[in-house]
Length: 248
Length: 328
Image (tube, rainbow over all chains, first blue to last red; front, side):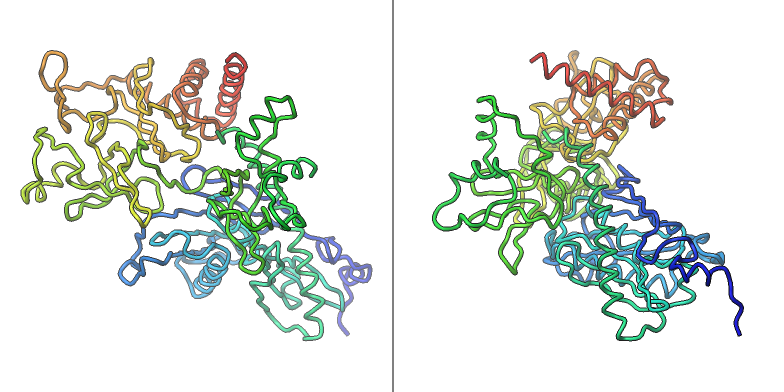
């Protein structure tokens, strides 16, 4: 028989290892314009101990090597994700793009391509750089939120906010916003939606989840996304109030 | 919402009444009339939208900057953060920051990125590089003639990659890229100085964008958000455009220019002032610059980089501008 720990006792009262209730998000702070004025748009997004920064450059003339086979009526969206050497428990030996970060880059790019109004700047390029500073679970969803905020900050026309969160089911209870400790013990479903239409644009599952739980977990995640959208919106609104007077 | 109703009334024709616009879509002068009549002035905050907000579900409006039409229900949706504005049928969202589009006649500051056949490509902070044709510049010698193959070969002697120029927008091409010209003594290659980048939207459009400030420094406030600060009058590099002669008819040569420490300090101070204005999102034009400069004099130049000092200067300038607004 496995040992019974104090965590199990807590869980009986539906309290998660870090003291949250199942539907509670970690503390979220976000800030726009952290690289103002070097980048066209930038933002930081912190959820609990997960910290992400994003910067958007452009639109500008196409300057990458893609130029050669680039259709002048199309727009290039370039997305680069990287994680700091000190971001996770084990120190990474090199900062070079590994397979995992390349995958995240390409996933992020497809999200960006989905929300940016297609080909609104023909012949131009938009660069999105996302840096993970600290990983305590839900880093990919944090990246999506940070990148969205940076796009808004840059004034790039987008259809809607892309917001994302993680969710799971454990002991038949739905939980949102999985931290690194919980991630080791259960499945992790990353859910990204368009904030207004609730259209699902990202769905990524790590580990196994029984399929009859999927709907509940999804619903929980979409609720979590709505909560995050509110927080992002608040940050945007604050920034607008600050800038309003220069609208002459 | 009641305000929306009255604003809408003249717009609606026929049976589209059922859908009420979510925003006050009156034309600008309607606002002005209402304010003159003494009704409460409409704040921009009331017209705030964020990407994904439906501006109107009515038909018959034109999609302007910062909006798009949702293909599923044909509603007009905002795509950037800003305030909704309407000019006749055209609905736009005026955002802050964002992309510099450029208008004919704008003064811009840019950096040469490429020398091409008969043209230079110039980074002007837009979505595409600006194009400066060989035929749209004044030759250094000041001759007026057709540009020959020799001129083409010597293009790099006139402007090379990395040079900073000031120019005016001559026209806008079909693809949205901007054609520049420097055919005036005001424009051309820039001499020693500092380039500051700010959001293009906070540069206030004025009649004049090139100022020789009383603090002995000249600034070029590019509409594109690039600001050039230089200790030389008009910021220009001598000997690169015609009519360089000064009063006694002799050309100033670069070697003769002496930039003193005081000049450099003034340039650095002004650069910090512009950074402070940009950080507080205050409009940048000659008056606001002078206010900021005056407010900065009680600090050492280096102290101006401190966030609290920047904020204080922003606050002082804001008060000054409010005073000025009240006086006029």
